[in-house]
Amino acid sequence: QVQLVESGGGLVQPGGSLRLSCVASGNIFSIDDMGWYRQAPGKERELVATYTRNLSTLYADSVKGRFTISRDNAKNTVYLQMNSLKPEDTAVYYCNARITTLQRFTYDYWGQGTQVTVSS
Image (cartoon, rainbow, N blue to C red; front, side):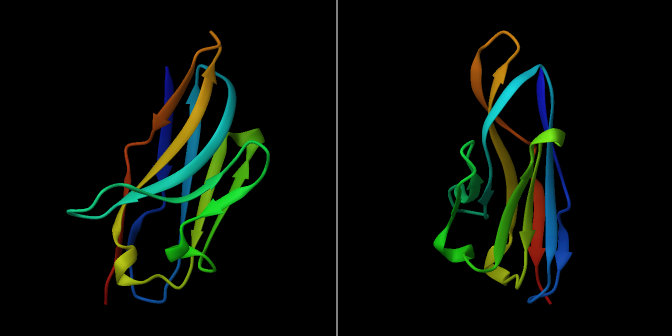
């Protein structure tokens, strides 16, 4: 079994910062892309940022310059530093990872989600 566990969400005022973490554990042989998605009420899930296996990053236009994704391969962990938060960043944030298991099967895995609320 493979698990992705997110942490770090919460309530923050506009202009504030939060740091999300996601740890992958279990039956893991290797991890390719790791990233973050979000889903606001009544909206579709959207990509926020991703960190590919070849060490490149991709950001949604709406978060460029404010959010930074990073990764610690030794800890199977991906982070999302969110600065200058806006009310429109309010959403459930989901961690995603493409993982190859010890049996050499590759799947996309999702975390359970962590709520981020930006409000005064």
